[in-house]
Length: 138
Image (cartoon, rainbow, N blue to C red):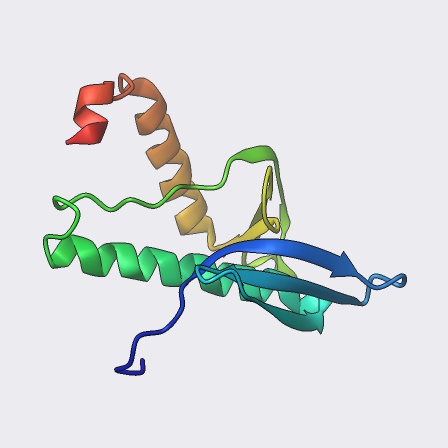
């Protein structure tokens, strides 16, 4: 990161897809009103978006460790709208997929042991009462 002040990106202000759907473009809007465009192959976009989500989660963990967020990690999960599963390559994994309201679908390749652990974790979460608004804010 440079030591000199930089303008801050505040939003993605425009998007475009070529007629074939092979290329996409978008523009960042900065706090000074300027814009800068980015282009990439459409097939690379899910990886880029996931990298940005991972970066946000890393920054949240660092803030929590530094005491900047009261110890809570503030990451907004993407809302799933449908889920599915299929056998992975060689039948040694199960691929869990979730289509999301925003962003690319999420795909996780899980070993049978991780599938069982996920089922147990989901069952446990469903059996617990939901957190109160007060506990989420603390």
